[in-house]
Length: 383
Image (cartoon, rainbow, N blue to C red; front, side, top):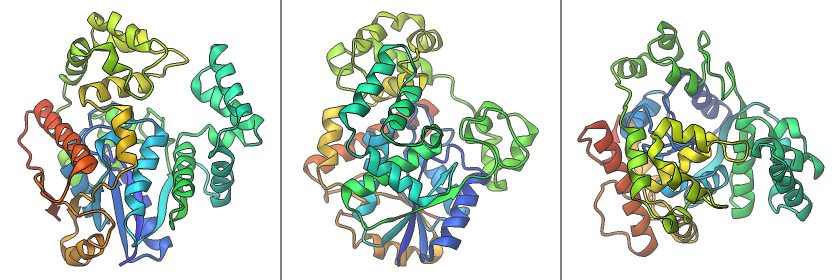
């Protein structure tokens, strides 16, 4: 059973996600669609609207054959680590033949050319990047300017989903993985669009306008039934600042992106409260997403040195949800992975770095349960 993979968060699942699943199945020629999805916290450091099992169920109901978990140390991390961690897991599954991803530009060769240009950042690239940052430009703008000076298309790399697509392609090239990329041009809203559209709104627009009647038209009915009853948790910000208050600067410096004295700055303004802290810490150099991710990683004890160790070590395949009709075939295919298959929160199959990484996933899951006031069981489901 060959798979076309999709790397995702599905926060929440919407019509655009369903479209990509459909295109992955239609265009790839593979037997099934396999999603690798973050747990209950996102790459931008936000708590997901639903727990990982609810989001995995939505994906399977929408056409995925299986959803496996992207380990927390990779999921709550900068784009390069997010992508590299996902490709590390996917490349350990021989049956994964293609990777579909949504993007603003659907030209496969553009992604390959851009990835080859960026895979080993030249001194010219680094000098331009840090020169832009030192002059007060934003990281996104400085990165695009550095890319253009090295021969790339700054308009192409200036689009959020294109950036992730390039990172996926870079990770595949670095790993020498036998996975073919399959860019799927997005329909409807842009990734960062905050206003709802008629049928294809961004996940951000849906999260920002949960009570709008337009939301119903932007997601499958079974997702909307859960979404309309979902309560937005108000405790998350307080939880993050409480964890920051208890943290020491030595551990804060172990988090991706928390350097250049930012660890001291965050500790100095911890008493401001979450929203004011976020506003005060956000600058052109340090985006709000970066600050949120640092705070989330601190709360979940996700550190650079651990992540590097996990990246260099054999890990595990953790199915969250499998389509009932072909569960046996899917699990049989996954069992041929180089990594052990783990379907429950307790295991004797893991040791060393794999077990340490698994414990990070458990902490993430327990934290999400605590914040939501729920008692969801951490076992694979069939849908």
